[in-house]
Amino acid sequence: MKKLSTVALVIVFVASAFTFSAFAAETTFTGTYRIRAYNEFNFDKKLEDTRAIFPGHDNAQHDGWFDQRFRLVITHKRSEYLKAVIRIDIVEDTWGQQRNLRMNDSAANFSPRAYLEFTFPKIGTFTVGKFSETYGHGLAFSDSGSGTISLTGARWVNAWGPISVSVLYAKVADRVTIGSNNPEYNWDANLYAMNLKITLIENNLVELFGGYLQDNDSDGASGLGGILRNSWAWNSNGVGAYSADIGFVGIAYTGTIADMIEIMFENSYIFGLANPHVVPPTMTVVGRSTTIQGWNIYADVSYYNNLLRVGAAFIMGSGQHHFWGINQYQNLNMNYISQDNFVLSNILVGGGGGDNSIWWDGSFGQDNIENITAIKLYFEINPIEKLTLTTSVTWAKWTEKVGRNTLGTRTALVTSKGSAYRHPAAAYGNYNYQSWDTSDDLGWEIDFGFSYEIMEGLTYSFNMGVLFTGDSWDYERADGTRGDWGEIWSITNALTYTF
Figure 1 (spheres, one colour):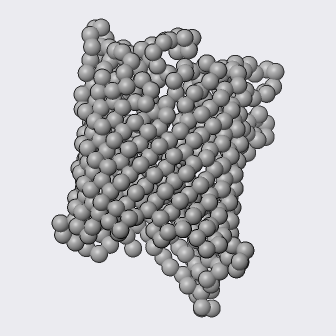
Figure 2 (cartoon, helix red, strand yellow):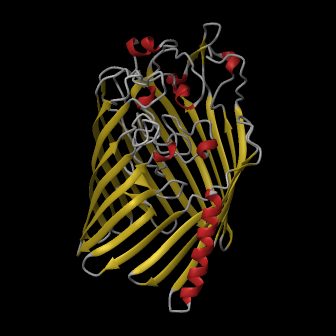
């Protein structure tokens, strides 16, 4: 029914656009068709080589699949003061994934991004609907809208010379769909945020931003990204046990010097408090108030001209150095307020294969920079007009040591010494590995990629990365000897048509 409603909405929107076009309105259609092939190697070892919690399952060392997407964006501009935009992903299809045996797994996910934007002179521009937003470089707060999830709410923007202000309200999670007979019915999440942009010097932007997230289901699928669900506060009924009040502040800079040096910087801080829910007496809640704090630092400096770019980047995200169940989550980094596209490398902090990848939700994958410290040197060159070559070398460590070196009961997880994190593989896979020892040695990564414009609108791209894993990946084999994780590979081929 939802799909039919979305199709009907698009038909009405397009029909209206053509009707109004006769009255000097402007309608444009843009979009992309993309097909990609993924290959991942050694993101999870074979289970017969470990003390696995689920023995007998054969988790292969290689995973490969294809996916495709057709995205259409319709913009209807009535005047310089009024426009409407709708984006729809008509095809979201995955096939050939080996690990999860997904064959021709068509999501047909319409999930449109649609918003109305209108401007009142001197008062400002208002955006209402489902749209995207990014503060700074997106380490603390960003939702590019490129995925299937965008912010839903309202935004006001106005500028006075070199200064502009943006104020935002967004509904991050709304749980009314589960029904009013469920205690989680009104456990939603609301975000209030503001961004101040200052451009006193041309091509040099400073951003001061902050916000407040009131999350009534913080150990569910909203603001905290399920982090608190892993704590001992999760009760036996499976009902969310915590609500949270989360604040974030930050400063960011983006600028160029002499049209040849580009600098990017962000320092953001996250803080808050999580409290146990008051639930009906028939439900048992275990837990206590929990303080939350985390921070991010990012710096990137590069030299560029028409032929090449060479640069260095540094990133550090705080980690958790108290154990699950203790009264504080000190330095728990929380880049979970939204979904962003911040990419540092192919594997450590990269786009990867989306939610089809075995490492999508890991401590070092996708948009999550928790507990990562890394330095990257990179080089990009355009030897001919249509060809771009890129390469980089990244050294990385865990900000706080990983490898709790404990399997078993929840009490053991709380009282164990050495680390607040288990073996790195346990963060993204469905299996637990016994760490050989605690360590902050993550490893180093080499990446290579290129893109070539075959013809106008059609581009082929290739990206390959290999992570040489450090001591933190070592594990205890079933026979009690020390096992080396070995290299992790990721290879992506993509063909993109843009119109």
